[in-house]
Amino acid sequence: MAKKAEKISSNSKRSFLKILFLSVMGISFGGVVYPIIRYLSPLSQQQAVEKIEIIKDEVPIGKARFFTYKGSPAVIIQTKAGFTALSAVCTHLGCIVKWLEDKGEFQCPCHAGRFDTTGKVLSGPPPNPLPQIAVAESGAKIVIG
Ligand code: FES
Image (cartoon, rainbow, N blue to C red; front, side):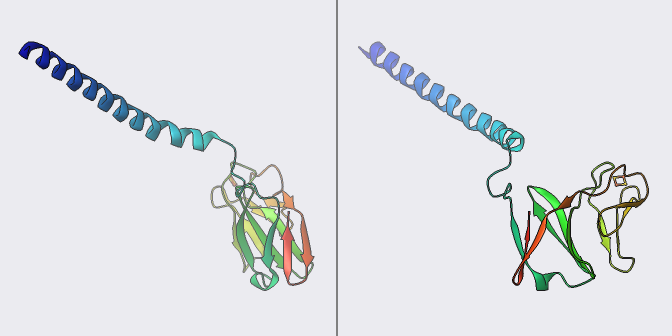
């Protein structure tokens, strides 16, 4: 009788340890796999938003305002000709361009590629201009996208 009780106790310990082991493995696996799946999955609804509104006053003439558009860095500037929105991702190797207000141009910090306010390449290795993003003015706002 005592042996039978001991065997039952041993079986329940074994079951408990098995459940504990599987739980720990499941949590560990989820902790590794979930970030990988999240990284590889398409952009969420919020990141993939099609249109962005910015208040005009936030972009005075000669200034640039960086923002995220469809999950990528983008920038809007205002010149005397109006507003222009561009991808801020350099077309050479993908670095993020910087706005040089004193020169009135964008410069890539990686290999010194230079772009004008329309995204056209001025010098350096970038093979293509910065892609433009549609801009429309709506009252006190700028609608981008
Ligand atoms: S990544 Fe911009 S110039 Fe090379």
